[in-house]
Amino acid sequence: MASAAAAKKVLKLAPVRKAPSVTEFGSVPIGHKPFAREKNSRLPIIPTRLKLHEFVPSRYENHYYDTVRDDVMYMNYIHERGPRPPPREIRLKWDPNDPYSKYRKNPSVGGDAQVLRRPPPPDTPENVTRLEKIQIHTMHKQAIGNKQELVGVIMALRALSGETERGGGHHAVEGVQVVRGKRSVGGWIRPNVPCGAKVEMKGQPMWDFMGSLVDFVLPRLREFEGVGLPYAGANPHKQSNISGVVSFGLPREAMQFFPQIEVNVDSYPKQYGMHIHFVTNAEGVGAQDRARALLSGFQIPFTRKQRS
Amino acid sequence: MLSRCRSALSTSSRRSLGARGLATPVYTDPAVHNIPHEAVDPPARPKRGAKPTINTGIVLNRAPFLTRDQTTFERAFQAYQGRLRRALHNPVAYDFYFKEGSILETRFRVEEMKREQAAFGPSFGKLDVLDVEKFEAQKLAAAQLAEQEGELEEMMPRVHEADTNKDYKSLDRAGMRNLYLLVKEKDTWRFPQGGLEDKELLHQSAQRNLYAECDQYMDSWIVSRTPMGVHTSSASAPGARPIATFFYKAHIMAGQVRPSNKVSDFMWLAKEEIEPHVDAQYWNGIKDMLSDY
Image (cartoon, rainbow over all chains, first blue to last red; front, top):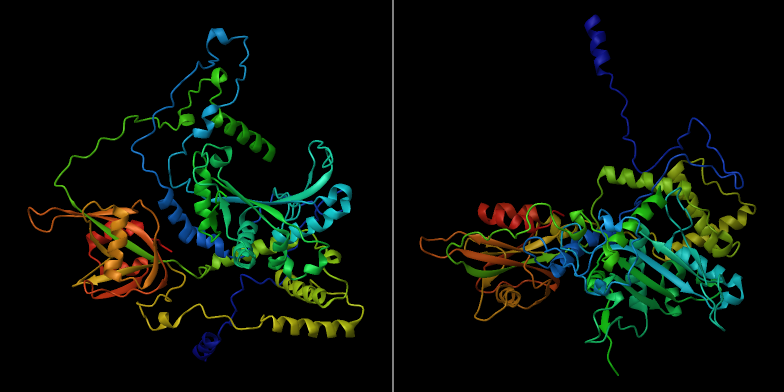
């Protein structure tokens, strides 16, 4: 009898449990203590410092790490044997330990003529050219006379970038910012007058913007031959050449080609053009060329300007 | 904290920019000039043995065209981040982006409700609807619009026929991986390669050798003029010279390889599939040039 009962007990199976999903949630976790609230807005103050990360896999980011990064490294690699020699010391240096310097100031002397000729740092696996951020900005002339005109610009940039001010907690997302005039230029602008908007994107929003620009906008632009390269034989020692930033503008007709805008293009009072800056980590002489090589890996076309 | 970081960053960048004439302070920190602590002299060259014969090889790559499959951890992490983002985002300015009572607004609100419920559970994202009949009609219209836009269309499968048939010659196989071309000469598998002609540069030789072995019926591009690696094989017979092969990375964009009479067969393989086909010494020379993904 006892053995039969034991057998029965063994045969009774535990109920089959479904593995919990990792992407769907049944309920909201309830905290032990309610959050403190901000005085004016009554919004909860989140007690931890949050930094939000990717929430969907990004096609263009994958493409960078799978393909473009290697290619850019091979294209830009400059072989150096051994460490670089220390820079030649042309002038006297201010030595704080020298008794002569005691009670004397360290006066700043003019600019640095060599800054435009400084070679890029030695190539290492860490400093392969990469995209750090994209900034877009728009100036809207009518906004100088009428502030209300800026609303459309701000909303368009919000839709384009998906960024809002401190959207997602404490981290340093500045969202769309209003640009104000800095100085007085007769008949054009006055100081502190709002005249445009700008937004900076990093991480996922940056790659998403790159995707929509390359997949939807550039192929549909009329008479777009590519981003202009400087004339052949132009002076290479320019500030823009050593900073690793590639910039170009889009005409106002381009705005409607962004899928974020296209879906409800009638909501915007006007169409706005924009300047786009791709900021990379490249530095030193030829940095802009290295940044261009990186961007052409994402199918942004470049064409050489012709002297007419 | 952030502002302190930023000010520290700005001073350091000023410092790195700053050979400022007389005002330049003396830095004892060698990192300022990128000088490593130890050696200042370049490393001594190794003693020369027999001069090798120079060959060029081409690592012809088919880049991945699908996003990678996520691991369970990655999916969980991203779902959690999405949930956080949803909880902390600023409210959407409905009244700017949508005309009140439009189909587009209904569509957005219904989709948003589904997303809210997926993130926080069924008690969230309830819509307060005044005119139920009108709302239902609009919901239908929105669904129709979504269907017209092809939202319910079935997506292409991530696994291709070539994967199931184990067709190693197809460029459609293993869409998530970097594939490399291997060719068969007599009984050995290797990358396409060939010798150097008189007064020819290495990258020109690479281009010529690629065409010589794989023909011109493909759209390919050699990435750089600098080689991605070198492999030196020991001399086959006593007294013979060793062979140094400089490898160049190339991409295939369109077309397909047609093996010439020099080679008898070809395959497109991912990194770990290459190992069993090549000999151990060759594998040790090439494995670090290939992508794990």
